[in-house]
Image (cartoon, rainbow, N blue to C red):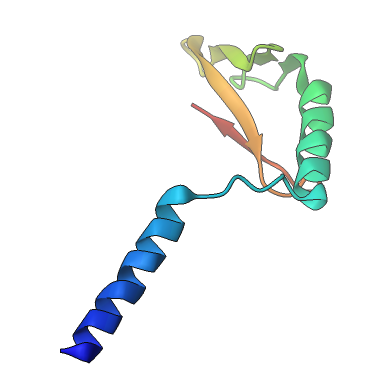
Length: 95
């Protein structure tokens, strides 16, 4: 019975610590990476024209995009975009 009570007490302690969730400051490396990603994102703003059937994609500052002139039918797409990952090799996510 004593082992069970100790295990229960340890489990409650872990649960209380997990629920309270202290808000730690953002590490300096992470803040630096976010700032660098924002700088890369600023370079994307504007229109980019592709080759035949690739169309023109325009990235706006409010994280939206429009892609026009896609394929032989001139399809259009609109949505949101973001950058993720390492600032030296970011990944463009278009939704």
